[in-house]
Image (cartoon, rainbow, N blue to C red; front, side, top):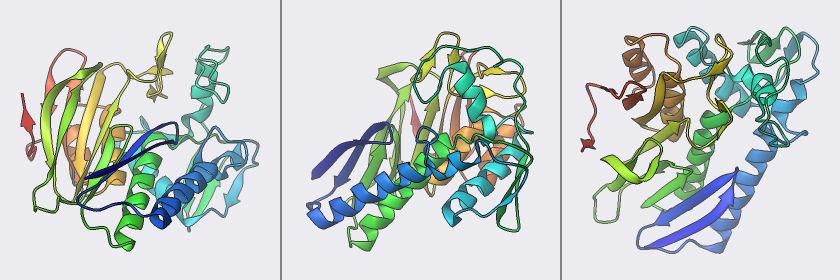
Amino acid sequence: MEVFTFEALGTKWNITIDDQNLDEVTEGLIRRYIKDFEQRFSRFLPTSEVNQFREALPGKYQISLELRTMLEHAEKLRALTHGGYNVAVGKMLELAGYDQEYSFEAKEGVKDIQLPGWSIEDGKLSIDGPAVFDLGGIAKGYCIDGVAQILKMAHYRYFLVEAGGDMTGTIKKDGTGWRVALEWPGQPDKAFGIIELTNQAVAVSDGFRRRWQNWHHIVNPHKHRPVEEVLSCVAVASTAFTADCSTSGLFLVPGEDTFCTIGRAFQSEYVVFKNDGTLRVSPNWSGELF
């Protein structure tokens, strides 16, 4: 079993191939795909596609199919969370300190900023003024699925692709699934359960890894502050993209009953850790909880 490890998109990647070696051509395709993806969709790169709207005038703009797909899912999440999830939160994150310089120092105006209006209309992006998009976890999930597709096109049948704790896997050569330990919130050396992936994906989201001062990277735009009601969540779905969409929504649901709504919308199973020490587990959860 070979493990190919590298750094990309600001995190560590591991590609595990069962009973086969990763050839140089496929490795090169994967590296180029991820590099191109980052250059197109990272908020931290001035020339990226998502950054071209920072100074944009109100209007409709042609965008790539990939960005449209991600924004359509983001629009769905925004509706399900009553506006709690909004990828136009980029400027708020930058004023809070999560900027291109990684200053991690909150600036004036962060409590007063109003997010721009945006929507996808007839396949185009419609905005009512300058917008800074932060695709965050849903973009990483989309990219993980892209890497998995490259492996499938190269006729790899048994693999696990992992990036920063999110992953997608086929099955192992012996027909069994990939057993994945699920990290206890804020305690990397402790697991709260195990999930076995068989042609599935899992996404994990928490507010512990990117934390500074009184902020972390998951913010509620209605309250102009980080989400504190939820500590972390895990979602299992058919793709890494939909699993990451699920965790993004679970963090920002407006009420208890909406957890199930997110699960149904993205056909996912989930575990949510709340800040009062309780768990919310989906009825269809198939993993093991310790």
